[in-house]
Length: 80
Image: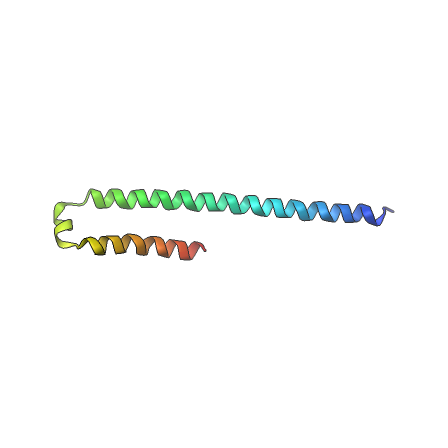
């Protein structure tokens, strides 16, 4: 037979732990998504830079930039 304060303290402790763990999980996932996005951007940029010159003659710069922004917009929307 414990007092009400004992159970209230346990409840508060569990709640605080849940908040801290939730926050740490959010930070970890955010950091992971940020790193994945950076890695994908670098790979995409590397592939575009290594493309043959004919690609740049036939593909307008606006289309290349649009493709970059569209890919990352899609990723951002799916993550959010």
